[in-house]
Image (cartoon, rainbow, N blue to C red):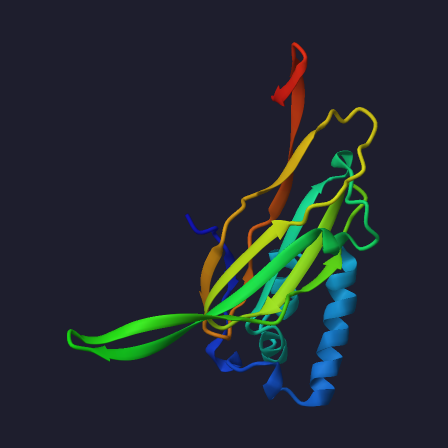
Amino acid sequence: MPAKRVIIRKDPAGLGTFRDLDPIVRARELASFRDEVAKQGPLTQKAVQKWIGSAIARQRLLAGVVFGHIRWPRSLGRPLIPNLGDAFEFLHQRLNLNGVDTPSGPVKTGVLQTMPAPFVHDASTADEYRVAFQFFADFFNHFSYRMREGPWERPAGLRPGYRFLDPYEIVPFTNDGTQTIFLPDIQVRYVPLIRVGGMRVLK
């Protein structure tokens, strides 16, 4: 089942994108978003919606933007790499629909086009590790992600086990290019191993 997402609807008067903004206005609103939202802690739908309000320029600045997070408690440790975001791989594809005439009539066919990689950054807090990502999307989209193989630190008291992403799925969604979308948080889960006789098995 596709993951539920939060869509920030726009006032019809605000239709347009950042390309429609005067460069001075764009720079001003980007600075405002950075200082009033991005630097104030984990990015949330509520905070972004409050910042946008009814301001046309802000609606256009974030039109078509998709936000999301991968998060997990610090008690599970972190990947043993300098850049937290490098522990994960993201793939955004757009489905381009084409019409083909057949003896039975026109048929729609689709080709998946790989889009630029999402912007990824470390958004960790005092309580949990967070990897934030964002990208621009319009029309029909597929978004997938996975955890790259590699060692993680093992904090004291954490039994041997394995980590996985929840949910782990391909997320299909549409965006008319004017909406700002928040995907549901992806969580790193941990399953410890237990010892049965001389063997370790999943708990």
